[in-house]
Amino acid sequence: MNDLDAQQTYYALGLATPERPPLSGTHTFDAVVVGAGYAGISAATAFVEAGMSVIVLEKATVASGASGRNGGILLLSEGTHLGDAEESSIVDESLGAAADELVRFIEDNGIDADLRRGSIRLAITKRQAAQLAKSAVAGSEQARAGRRYLDREDLKEFLRSDRYEAGLYERDNINLNPHALLEGLAAHAEKLGVVIAEHSRVTGMHAGRDRVTVMTDTGEIHAQRLVVAAGTGSGDVVPSTQKTLFTGYSQIAVTEPIDEAILDAAMPSWYSTSEIASFSRYFRRLPGNRLLFGISTLFETIDGPALEDRIRDELRDTFPTLGDVAFHSAWEGAIASTVEETPLLDRIAPTAVVTSSNGVLASWNGGRIAAAATSPEYAAYDLLRVNRHSNWPPLGAPERLVRKAAQNLFRIKDRL
Ligand SMILES: Cc1cc2nc3c(=O)[nH]c(=O)nc-3n(C[C@H](O)[C@H](O)[C@H](O)COP(=O)(O)OP(=O)(O)OC[C@H]3O[C@@H](n4cnc5c(N)ncnc54)[C@H](O)[C@@H]3O)c2cc1C
Image 1: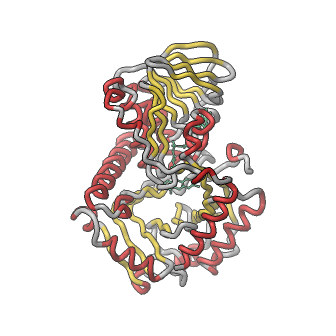
Image 2: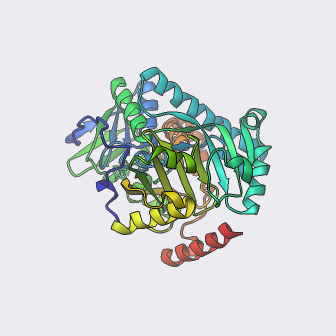
Image 3: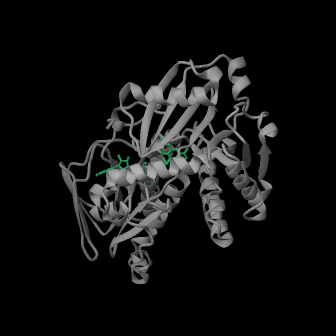
């Protein structure tokens, strides 16, 4: 497997990041958070805003996980895919509120995160096109107002690839540099008093009735509240999550600057795009006539030079004229997901909660909800003990076999 921490991303290069020393010795805080991704920084901010002292323990650096290496395409309308109208609009509204908050933060604090709005979801089959046409008229009035179904002909105004049957334009979705934004949010949290210890991998913990102890190789934290937001590392910190969370993979390349006329002829629009297939591709323009091109292998990790080759094959298949462009950087990222792709929010002790979600906005929301849920008042309701997620791997079957079977199943589904 790749050493993901060692891969440099386009986002990280040139980004000023402070030195944050590792944990040293034994300390007491009101709250401790494991992981400095969107979920962890969000939880820590919620704790400090509630007047508590809080420390974040991060095994590598802020944004070194999925939060700093994703496509930066923040979708506000995940609920549309849920079917149930009421549940859909609750999800869309909560993601919309998180998006508004992050946009306000960027504007108020002058964060250079290359923020742009608008995206297109793409269909590669007629069945998917019908699904998008249905989504165009689903959800709340406000959501519908920002959407437009694009047929093959309409799409040409925004991107020129024979691969696509149709698209769904969504006005409110956000595109940005996710690493720059998270660094800004972390710096803001620190200004409020949050302590972030980097290079501090949590190696063990004990969560009792109303006290927790969290250990690293160089220190120990005693606290009342705990949020574990360790992404794909959550299974190591809280072994019980291993039965519901699985790790999926996605890969991204950013090109060197492309001749403007050639790029305009392939991808004239700044709207981001993402296919709705399981093994999806996503791409968007970056400043300086660069293209970010992502693929999703879901169950497969790709090592070394094969990583660039694989992305290039899919880029060439999407845009034949861009098949030979030079890459500036390419990297892989891992995503912790439940089988249903719905957020995981599990109580592990009366004042300790683990959270994991797929997506930047959902993770930001999840961190805050997890922090609130560590309150003893919430523990009394015990809602989180009801685990609605399916087991992973299902039926106790060997993980390798299940991944293979699921891969084949999704391949067939994508082609239908
Ligand atoms: C390639 C890729 C593309 C994606 N594209 C998009 C996209 O375009 N839009 C979108 O909305 N979402 C996207 N996602 C998903 C999104 O990035 C994640 O869902 C989200 O960032 C998860 O945030 P998190 O804070 O839960 O996890 P993470 O960001 O993974 O944070 C977890 C942190 O915990 C730390 N950690 C792990 N174990 C330990 C330990 N034992 N001790 C201490 N620290 C530990 C890790 O180092 C990490 O920093 C993508 C993901 C990937 C990988």
